[in-house]
Amino acid sequence: MIPEAGSADGTQTALSRVDVSPEAAAFLVELTAKHGPLMFHQSGGCCDGSSPMCYPVGFFRVGAVDVHLGDLHVEGLAPIEVFMSRSQFEYWKYTHLTIGVVPGRGAGFSVESPEGRRFLIRSRMLTDDELREFELV
Image (cartoon, rainbow, N blue to C red; front, side):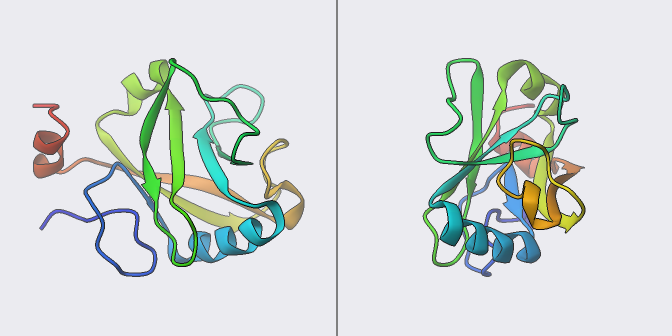
């Protein structure tokens, strides 16, 4: 069966390239209460390594060089958009990304930085069905 993505609350959503762990979803609820609606941009590995960077909506400007990977669906929150630069996407387009959270210091510009936890991504190769769905075969 094709994994249906983006639903930390167990509801089914459309097939997606991104998902969120239950722990990260709970943390996003906390962060949204402090900062308002959030979005992610997967860092390209410069100053903050390759961490998923979490920003209040409107704080980070996405443009034509960014790819919208999908939305995270967390119960009680508006969909949280996830982006990556088009050049980096070329390296990652055959993978599914799950945003999780672990103890540690977050990236300098990401909203979780002072919270003692940081976001990270776990990746897996897309299934054959997902490859077909995303028109990669």
